[in-house]
Length: 80
Image (cartoon, rainbow, N blue to C red):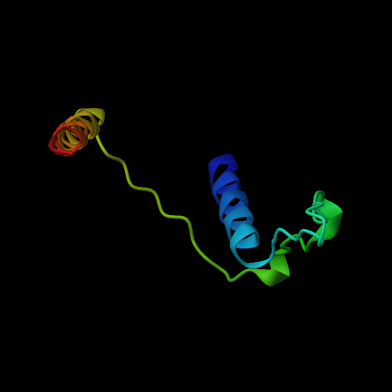
């Protein structure tokens, strides 16, 4: 239940950053939105309902995937 709460909080924060936050400067370059009081924070009523599902992946598979990604990144860098 704690992990699901963390996931819900993270999703709410991401939606808030994407849809409700903005950075505003005045004509002199002074930041006008420098605190939480300057923009809307998402509330539960602002968010859609969603379920959190769990998917387990064995650590060995994750290591193999990470190695493959690392090899691709290394070869892409060497081609530049």
